[in-house]
Length: 339
Ligand code: KG4
Ligand code: ZN
Image 1 (cartoon, protein in one colour):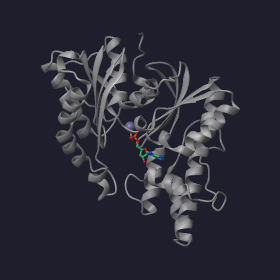
Image 2 (cartoon, rainbow, N blue to C red; image 1 turned 90 degrees about the horizontal axis):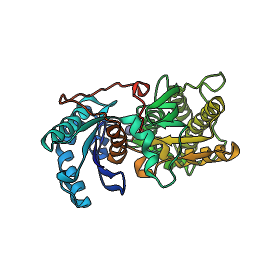
Image 3 (spheres, helix red, strand yellow; image 1 turned 90 degrees about the vertical axis):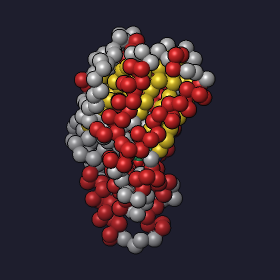
Image 4 (cartoon, rainbow, N blue to C red; image 1 turned 180 degrees about the horizontal axis):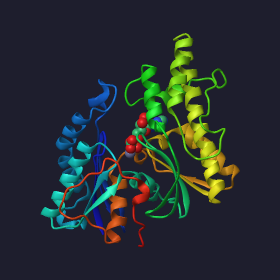
């Protein structure tokens, strides 16, 4: 079975072709970062218009690189939510229409399920069950995963997502959008111990997160100190350390609560080296194992959508001819897959 996957939920156009026997045959990505950089964040209308320009050329390119024609495909998967409604509608309209024209089944994919299953594209794929820490620009949550589609949310952010907190703090420090990776780079030159940020919501039981206070703490720290390069690096270090520590504390709690030994991290922030390092140390201590996607599949991409779509199609899930997008779509509303 060979599936074309299309991702357009935010500021990246991703297209990929996945084959259940041969694996990933091709994948193409166009990032809109430059388009939004002048505005300091994603401008939804510009994002939609750019997806309109890029999606079909990327599909043609992905087919060409895989040496395939549409007749070689068995289905079309597209991200239907959650995300920016206009951006989602572009991928959904193109995906649904191509499937109709090519006489193929179409399947609507949940963006966060795509992230959650992205580590399955690696050689060292995790077995079920596991705990997943999903950390992206729009979501932060801990999920108990018993199988594909069998998701129980253990905790989530009550305000900003982890990636959002990185981006907002980076903006305060004058870094370009999206600031997460840049802040992390700056933190590499930082010294541990000069600043101490709080670890929000770790002093009480529960698995929810709150990151908006860290941004305020960062703003106050920036204001109260000199604006030299070392101070900026030290603040970046302390901020990143606080986010990562907080995530690690909650992961440990979730693993203890569920009795599981496998931890999956996915979503844009799972590309963060310091987070990976800390969670690896935690899992070594807990005699468990941590799994994550290769760096390019941590952030938005078409490969994870093709893979998730394939699992859903094998479960006989297809969409009717109506083009639908779901800006809000809780992950625990998905149906379990019995492949
Ligand atoms: O999963 P993703 O590509 O898009 C959403 O679904 O939101 O995640 C993007 C987020 C951004 O907030 C970005 O700053 C953050 O992931 N991010 C990082 C790193 N790489 C990407 N945050 C911290 N450190 C990184 N290395
Ligand atoms: Zn994402």
